[in-house]
Length: 308
Image (cartoon, one colour):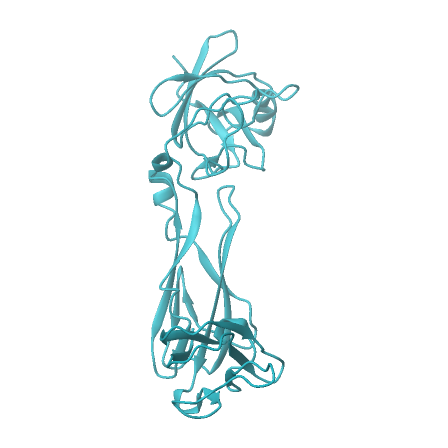
């Protein structure tokens, strides 16, 4: 039996760990209320561990050569012959002539399971291979008008593991535009009625537990009374024809929104069978999109110009 004040500690201390995470992870024996001298002695104790995966099956464990307390990939230094599943791994360790028995439990997540399998690796069903990533909810709305309210929620998503689920709402927001600011409260970004008109660029990030993730969000707040889309030629219906090899064209542009790629005008065919191509002709003065007719078919077509 192990002494009650002796245990295995892991550094860095994390809520969960990643297979092949960049930052090295160290196991060592520790004692309660240990002094600096005791810590130096216990740090040299070699651990001989047996590791069990989430299903209770034993997996190979080797320590790194010349560093008896560093665990690489937490399972083995040898090339992995299969893909390990995310979950809780149990370490049963012995030390000091097999007389000291200790146990440590770690949650380890396979962050790279979405990558192609290496030769010899065992296939894991897609349902078990969920990538750890950031999801921004409600991001479909990217144009806001004054006096409207909206919120964006950034969450950490991944395999159905408790340790990861507890971190779901831990991502945070940072503004990438010094001149504009929405209201960020923990993992929720609020666009309030008082939001100033302009272009916003925010980053959601999560830099914990061996992960460095970020996702960009861009949106605009506009004054609806000042926003117009101009179509050239003017009018709802227009007669066009080919002449001297010049293709008929209709231009849709706006000067209010500037030239950012997020809010450029978009054309689409609502009715008719005209063949056409669309070209983005935005420059530093205005956002502009042009539809060119490329055939000489007779008939009627209806096009719509809108903003994303």
